[in-house]
Length: 216
Image (cartoon, rainbow, N blue to C red; front, side, top):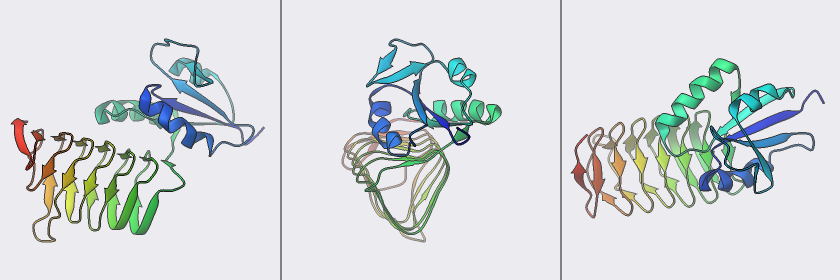
């Protein structure tokens, strides 16, 4: 039993349940998996036990690992700090059919769901979430705790700063090496928006072309 692991999935909402099958694929026969919730509403979800963080820490297999399946990047950061303090390893979860091409760097804590594509010469910070059918094209820089909802199209020469959220079906126009499109820290790009110019930190933008509807 020396190599036995217990993988905790933070968040038993819709995204957590979508991540569960990806986690199951990396389990060995002796590994355990649980959902971790602050307040348990159910004992099991999709056949998996729901436990508190205290219960997770009190179970003692050889190694504890965690996946943070929560869309809010600030909450991910808080959980990550607690896990780091407690010596819990944060792992990457990457679907089998994700395409990662050439010279791509990915930080710890990434969740890449089915049909995600990362092309070439891309740097991605920690705790990046890319949901179904999203892509990141060449020469992009993605910060920490960035979240892509499904079908986000991030074209080349784009910089996305920490804690930005990009909604379902949004498209970010390609920048240039001299003038990349920049999505500022904490900005939110609304569902279906087409971003044709840089977005200021903290702004919420929406529409085609995307315009600010709430200043940061």
